[in-house]
Image (tube, rainbow, N blue to C red; front, top):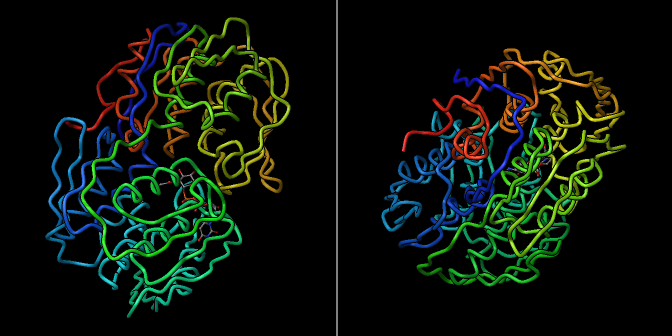
Length: 424
Ligand code: UD1
């Protein structure tokens, strides 16, 4: 396991440019195969999840190259339709190739993604919606065999606005015959990015950013250059880092409307947060105040991907805070590690609630990250603690953060920089 050492207690000061979004890049990478030619993705984050999606593209027969921060996919030579085995297990986003392969090849074999440390994560909504588009699906052990003679538009009502299911069905229906209507679709900014990318490539999608998406199938897509938008969760993570450690910083590339709920909670906790265009200034001088209730919800609600980082910073806030997790059933893994650092957190599994009784100070100790955002939250806790915090499980962080150590060091943090980024 990769680990880093953090000597906490230093306020942060400086500015950071926010990297491209992981959750926008992953479905877009799957979407590149819908065009039988070249796609250029500028500002694509160099994170392990992106590299794993690139490996899958190469296994399928595509040619993938980097030109600095631009990822170029040539899908002309795609010759396979199976995403199985080791490469598929490396990232759950591999399941997005299901919709994209069916859209292009009318056939796909994909490994069942299975659960992970934050929850069961079934894909029943993806499969039910694909069946409505005419896809026949056979499950054999952990493989899904999918075929469709002619993908045909349909009306699909999601019982829950699943991000992945919405993306898979968008990818499957862009080249379908006729019109697909998605109701109660997810509205996350990353869905907007996927739609904008596809529209730039010639797709016909309306209702973008709403819960009703209308996709009119087109014959083919065309070559496009698309800039991956900045990562709202990375921005939120650095905002909480400053909130936790104290100090002030300017983050460049933050869209206010994408992180409204996060900013609202930071202000409730006593931070000052101001925007000028896409530049965001955060300041935290006094001890944080508790927040009576944070409840994770689909966008525009408070994101589950920011819940762990808030648990870290609220652990030293004045008073009692409550976090209710409504999206993933097992997403309080970080609580035990924070408790090792001196936090006082009670988890009520029956109501998916964490009660955080603020303590004065966290103390450095070895802790283990068990999922992407939980590990990032431990890095924040390390910045807040006295003494040395050793955070292991940094390979999780590298799934989503290009170089968290260099970013924090540029803000004045005392972090050993050895293993925070994937080899470039
Ligand atoms: C995506 C994000 C992840 C984020 C999550 C919620 C990517 C690569 N990942 O994950 O970072 O935390 O959205 O914002 O973009 N569900 C079902 N059946 C399904 C699909 C989902 O029951 O067919 C459940 C899941 O188990 C989970 C909830 O719905 O409890 C949300 O899942 P979903 O919105 O699909 O999240 P992901 O796409 O997996």
